[in-house]
Length: 107
Length: 406
Image 1 (cartoon, chains in turn red, green):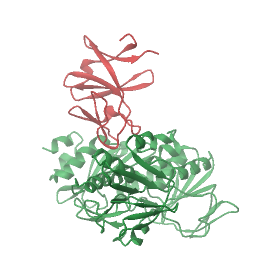
Image 2 (cartoon, rainbow over the protein chains, first blue to last red; image 1 turned 90 degrees about the vertical axis):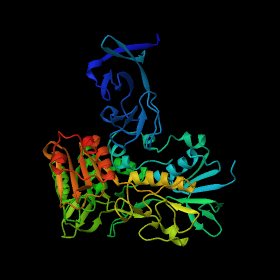
Image 3 (cartoon, each protein chain N blue to C red; image 1 turned 60 degrees about the horizontal axis):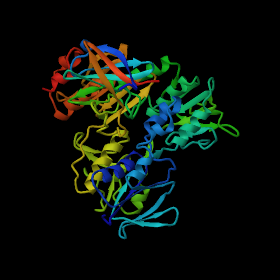
Image 4 (spheres, rainbow over the protein chains, first blue to last red; image 1 turned 30 degrees about the horizontal axis):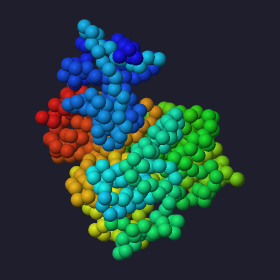
């Protein structure tokens, strides 16, 4: 994991189960999700058009884009309904105490 | 490998989704996607939005990444027109002189911009907006401080106006009807949008006809029916679209304001299907036939019809859904909001975040959401479920729409 640099983003208490928030790491927009107490991170911008998935709707372990209704699996980033066909990037999340960290490749 | 060949005519949203769905749903035969445009299949909504005045790369408009057609063994014949269908022989004639046989055929020929029948409408500097090439030409012609005249205050006209203002041009919009988007919106929403455009500096002339477009060698002015001339460096005409159903009509298929299909996308010929803008189809939610000009219908009707081509069809019965982006407004319509007699507004129009519901018999018949995309899924579900809704609860932003579904 030495190729990842971990960035502190949110406290675990910032995000209720079933919620998502956008965070910025540098200029990168990343969505952090709380799925029943487990935290996940994906690119925040839909692969189809410019919309924030953190503004979308979470149902089960999928997030639905608020703009055109395409869905992604949060854990894998897999695009699962039209119009989305390109998968989302996912990122490693680690929790230390109540701090959520997201791992991005260095550089 | 099945020896069957399925042809898809038209490389827009419907054609691309037909080909892709056929393959993804297990069709193992030959799929050929044929159309006269040279670009890979692309989505049209960005053409009057991000591609026109933003920095969206053209590849982002593509329905599927270009290599995916090869990966899925979908043969693309781009830049090739289909000139004739022979249903009895089950083959099509191409502009190249070739013929191609089919076992099943999808007609997804879409629509084209409606021409404005006035003198000067073909001058250089007069544009329609329907293709990537149109968008590029318009973008290249718009200059900060230049005069853009938009003819037609429908969605395309208003999006172009908003985009041209963003690019620094002076914009005049000329509309024959007495309000903007009269075919798609209730009068209250037309007034809301009109006010926004005027506040942003667009000069909007309603109830105004066009006599001619003048200029030598290119367009330099638009002469209104009342004799006034408006200076123009470029003119963009957006007065609606016309379905491309001539090829179907010539083949003897039933055509009536679009190719007549059933809820499975079947035409009057058992081997031929159609989907998208070009179809006149039944809509169970609306309780009548309709021809829809929308991205969502182009996609979902095609997916549905492609499944039907494989014997897996279900009745297509979606609630029409549409969106537009103008300035900082994201406008989403669910159903067809035309009847404003029983309206309930939730949220604050002055804050540019609200939904207006139009009720019929106590149920939501349609709705318009301004910067409220998150709620739209629940509006749709309430409509699909045919829920009787409480007006006061609906109007109260503190009520979660989700809760009304129970």
